[in-house]
Amino acid sequence: MSRLRGAGTTDAPSAHHGRRGALAVLALSVSLVVIPSSTQAGKATDPSGRTAARQMIWAEDFNGRAGSRPSRRKWNFDVGGGGWGNRELESNTARRSNAVLDGRGHLVISARAETYTGRDGQTRSYTSARIQTLGKFEFTYGLVEASIRVPAGQGLLPQFWMLGNDGYRPGGWPASGEIDAMEVLGSHPNVAIGTVHGPWPWAPHGVGTKAYSATSLASSFHVYGVEWSHERIRFMLDGNVYRTITPSSLQPGSTWPFKRPNFLLLDVAVGGNWPGSPDASTRFPARMYVDWVRVWR
Image (cartoon, rainbow, N blue to C red; front, side):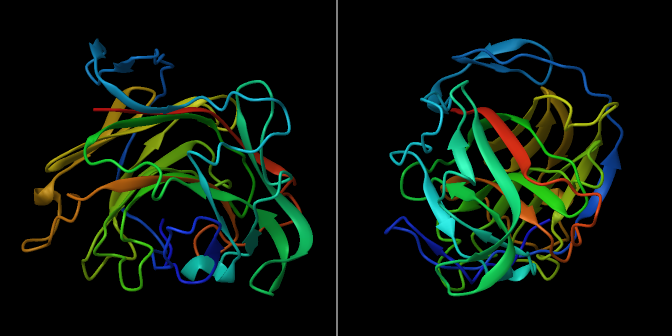
């Protein structure tokens, strides 16, 4: 899933407001039973099952005292709401109650059911957080992975994704390109979704796939990854490639926009056109735990 962007602000002076979009996924499904695999510092899990040496160019292990914020040297907060083009219901904040280190090496992003008036002056019934690296870390090509435990629940949408570095500028999306390394509908926590979006007539829907886990992805940490090269994007779950997308995966004549620097984003969305609204079964606060994020060249 992706969402048009326009509303909201950021605490990073280098960031621009722009648009991102989508309501659903045009996806070919691939059945995958998750087999846990490990990723060591300085090395990455090779899709063939071998451990291949790579050059690590960026790492975040979220080490810090309990109650501290994510490093402002590495992360910006997107704040506000307005639905982000997908009619999301949350107001994103930079508060510790929505994004904080737990003192055990995890970032915790918490979606909460609470009445809150954001910087945009709008009052909403949910809060959450979205952090990103625009202007602080951007890269072109490589392997990016994150170890994440997602929340489950109707109306929740945890996400780990990448956006071209002009995607926040007015009119920047979808020409900027977007790579969604992981989206998990809280109502279907056994399914990981990977999607790309670009300047195509079907851009709001994207092109991607689904990986099916034998157990709920909310029950433990899993490694979500994307291996991105000049004309190939491979989606990975726990070191297993579940879809490869190339220019030939697109309709004839479609532009391949994935050639510019991208930045990273992490968030938990609430409600919207795709996941739908929370219901009485949804438990709040809903927490996404991020153990680490790493990028290799």
